[in-house]
Length: 291
Image 1 (tube, rainbow, N blue to C red):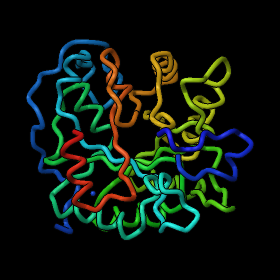
Image 2 (tube, rainbow, N blue to C red):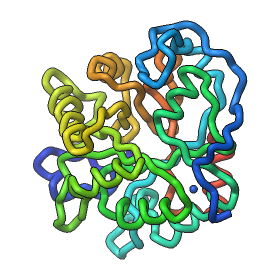
Image 3 (cartoon, one colour):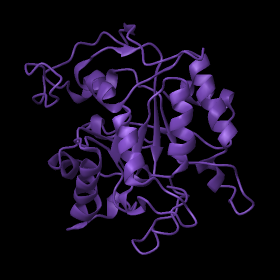
Image 4 (tube, helix red, strand yellow):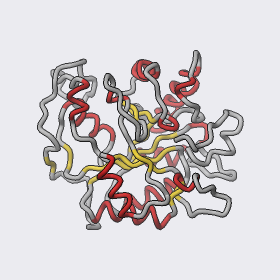
């Protein structure tokens, strides 16, 4: 996410700007997405899994068909001050609504990170035409427009929260604790997205506590639930980050449209930016071509 501003803790409070028929639902009509049998690996830690199940090895996980995962940031109409490159990260309200309508009309069913994890790690089945819809950075419009639009189609989303911005209502407006908890209580997934969006590749020493550990604890306090899923700021990661995330109890982590890691694919799950420039047709073509 090279065009997105790298925030400092001092300016993040004020300048955080850049960082799918009508009855389609997450259905009980489940179909097999693939038939690869899980291989033995590390002991399963998911309490919903049989304790005798083992996490598949990396090669098996990489061989499973990827699920389209979309990443949105701001959902608002463009202004004269928005840069040409910035508009990739700003989805006009009507464009976003058309994106989600297209997904519903095309028969897509939203899934959440726990479902994706169980599919990748254990080979559990997924609904037909699965898609995951994610939002980064805590923007208020993800609640007022994003969640409202998803609810219309019976969809659920994933909200990766940057905690420095919670409740801020200055030039840019962000979700508060009550709204985040409401999203969680309604069955959406809340994930961790650091304190103030610093590049994980540059972390040293106490940065892991400040940027990962404490913000995640904050989200667990807000939601009353364990936070298992993480999204790297800018989609940038390095091998050194993965053991740090594992140490802090994360099950997986999300990048953007770069190559997955051959050793730890669960910690480099791919997403694509749903560009503000894309029509519904372009979005669908991008999903098909990218996954």
